[in-house]
Amino acid sequence: MILLKIRAACSGVLAAAAGIAIGELFAALVVPAAGPVVGVGGVIIDATPTPVKEWAVRTFGTNDKPLLLTGIAAGLVVFAAVVGVLGQRRRVFGLAGAALLGLAGAAAAASRPAAGPLDGLPSLLGGAVAAGALLLLLRTLAPSGSAVVAGAVADDAVIEDAVVDSAVVDGGAGRPARLLDRRGFIGTAAIIGAGAAVAGGGAAALHAAGRNAADRSREAVRLPAPTSAAPPLPAGLDPGFVTTNRDFYRVDTALTVPRVDVSSWRLRIKGMVGRPLELSFDDLLRRPLIERDITLNCVSNEVGGPYVGTARWLGVSLADLLREVRPAAGADQLVARSVDGMTIGTPLSVVLDGRDAMLCVGMNGEPLPLDHGFPVRMLTPGLYGYAGACKWVTELELTTFDAYDAYWVQRGWAARGPVKTASRIDRPLPFARPAAGTVHVAGVAWAQGRGVASVEVQVDDGPWQAATLLPAPTNDTWVQWRLDWAATPGSHLLRVRATDKTGAVQTADRVTPFPDGATGWHSVTVTAV
Image 1 (cartoon, rainbow, N blue to C red):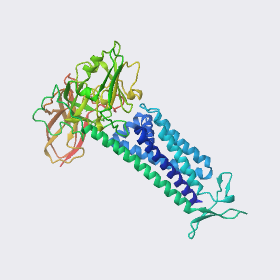
Image 2: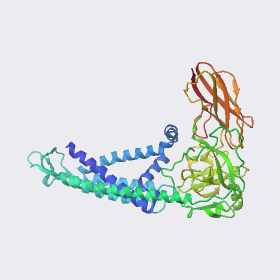
Image 3: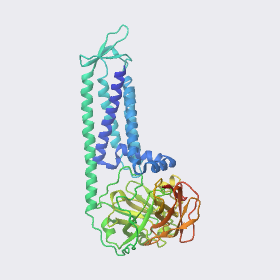
């Protein structure tokens, strides 16, 4: 009996694997963004409560997406195994489970913001394949004759026969024993497993080809020189002022990075405008380009967290574009939409107030990396990314805050996301054991749009000491700071705070990122020896 259940569970898992593999292969051929697993994962991300999302970002960082996909796979294995066991007893249960698998995937794919009419087909096809594969496997588990009663396999003991390629089923009182087809099960399982492997490998190869095509598209881009170039960085900066593209943080909801071919990319500007506009990538590059050093940070960044970085960005002035389309009176929100359906809402007044909001095409001297929004992303200095930095952007719509809530606002985040003054200690590291004497304390502080006027460090509960600020190119970047601390032996708590150029001192009140950004003083504990 135990062996029969194990085989039934394996049948369910194999059937589900075959169905998912075929669904993924069909999606890779027809609608690459509508794979069953990614569709379900997107729905899970959207439905996850904000505190859980924040915990995942805080705990796992950029590994949250692989962990989610692993969790989905584990859940599917358990579900499929249960369906296999139930289907071995009643075929209708197996068919219902396969149908549920297909319908759930189709519903998830169809519910995505950028879903098209074909997006549900891969999951429906996968569900049908899973049902057929499960029936084939379960047929090999059904003993012949009277052991099958009203579509159910009798709940009898299964005894392994070490000599013949079969298992003996005790027919029970008054009934003869029957043989199960072990060889048939193994052969059928091998064929289905091989088919699933081939289909899954084909899907992976097609996705890899798509990634390679996107890479080639990016490599073919030749960025023009900026019409308005950023000045050289000031002398005397410490290493790390500019964050490399490789090290720049990535926080978004995309389980797979969108792969966009620049030849087919279009930007549409619509909504409350007097003159709708559509631009190709080449159209964008023919416009005057501005180059600016700007610090970007994620609203999910905890006090002292890593989700902040500075890059040299190249792009088209967003204010110039919007003036060209003539915003209608009453429009107060610019909604950016990405190729995967993400929406980011930005106050129109902020974009038009003179700051260097832009549609970026370059980052640190090269085309935008795929992970960071290639071919075009939006960037608004002084706003958190969730309120002004849409990646893979394809549409801009002028509307009102009363008429539309963007993705994160629908989930409780503040509609407007101005960056709060913050500072961080980068050296020494937490729990470091520096030698007593002069210890070099250093870090960064930021208050984009306002600029940082001063940074102070407190040791234990002593007086605040002014740190030395290194030069910053503009108020839109972070500033590096240093302090030489005369450390005495023992354990010490170091705190840091910044004051912006309006005179406002960074608050000590510690709050979490939700709903409009974290506040509080960053601190580290060290032991001088």
